Image (spheres, rainbow, N blue to C red):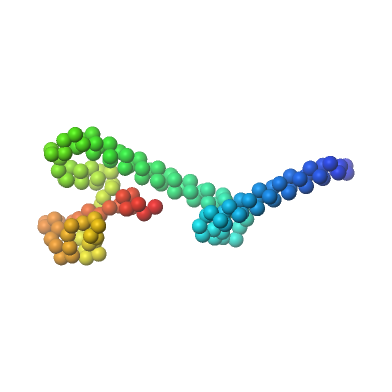
Length: 143
């Protein structure tokens, strides 16, 4: 086996030092700017990969949610924006159901939310079905 030259060893050391410096910068960034990290016993590179994968998955979900909301908004604008006097809440509610933005839910005392509803516990809601509609995760902004 050939003996490695001093210039090779020096160059290799320089690359190793530079890599270590970059890993230190990455680790410092993660600890300062990414809440809750490091959350596992792993190196900076593995932590960065895990975080990137989590963010990619979240981004994919948000893109899907955004697509549904855009379709819903386009339908509202196309069908109701120009003459709201001819539409009623039922048509808009049907569209929201079509795009899975609302779901059927049996009313309970826990459903009363002064910010989003105008009824109180014990009120008769949709007298025959006692069904109300609640916001799904997309509209609640639970992401």
